Image (cartoon, rainbow, N blue to C red; front, side, top):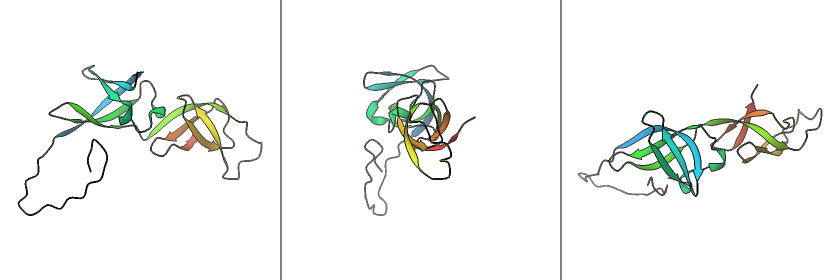
Length: 146
């Protein structure tokens, strides 16, 4: 797999073929803010800031200020390669249509907007102002947080 583009490459290597080893480091960075078409992250240990292009962030609407993300770096060039969001985020519902009382047994879903601006599907019993847990990999509602 080519890290920069995400393409899966099919190569067959013959015996004795030399492969260049690339050192990759996984570091935790905190999301600070968006600046134009890039996102600014800070290393909590060194306070060094790095700009990540928007194209590198798979689901930018799930980014929350202060969120800790993992960034894979090419160690020799100090170049960011991949940004990984946490598996789950906790966010408040800012808008959704009111639910119908007693409609909790069905598996029906309705659209809802969370505090970051992302739109997801939630069960009918979820109302405005409730705090929920969301899977960032799929963008699916997981559970209500108390």
